[in-house]
Image (cartoon, rainbow over all chains, first blue to last red; front, side, top):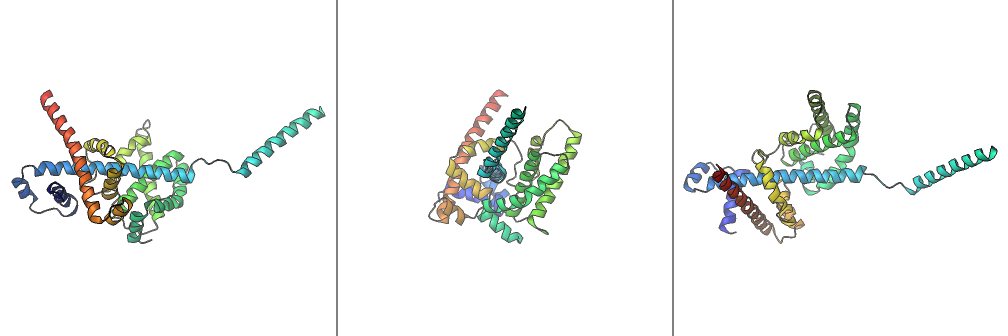
Length: 98
Length: 193
């Protein structure tokens, strides 16, 4: 890996895996280390928010798949048609009687 | 399902496990919320909050189940809904959506990665502009905690090593973009003062 990437990895190890006991000393030696560490911490916070948003989107998709509005089945469509036809016939006979 | 097996299943097949949990649990949560002055939308929002908390605890290894996952989830939802009802009685004009930020902040997470400031929102804009592959790689690793072997396979990298290098390249791109805007903000703040 390039030295710049190795530096990112070193800061990541300190922030997320194994905090270095002598980090304070390293910050004294390396003038940019504190600012770089702070910035990288912010990147992880942004990625946390992005991940949480993605998880919520995935949950919304699951909800839609399980409980979303479905097209009525053919049986339900036939039942509705028959019911409408029955109603029309009742109206017809009622009017015919009069 | 034991905690470790659940963690493993969530890491390797998130969609299937979450769908199963959803099917088993959501009807119970909806019934509870509807019986206690809530709507179906309230139930959905509360349930998603609970699933986010559940997922984060499970993949961070801080979940200790003493009952079935669905029982645990229903319990979180009851507490969240109880809290929401109490909040609504204090502030009747606000809605559940306004509470979401609080839920997100109260969700358990690594102290280093849990968002603390609006700067996370600033970074978020740059995450969205990274490109689909980089964004997916970073979010899969840092939020979803997927193993690098799995990430290498799903993102078509030849090895874990090349996935690792790519991850740091993507992180570097993000850092460069954020650093530029941070420097601009700093410049304008100092010149405006």
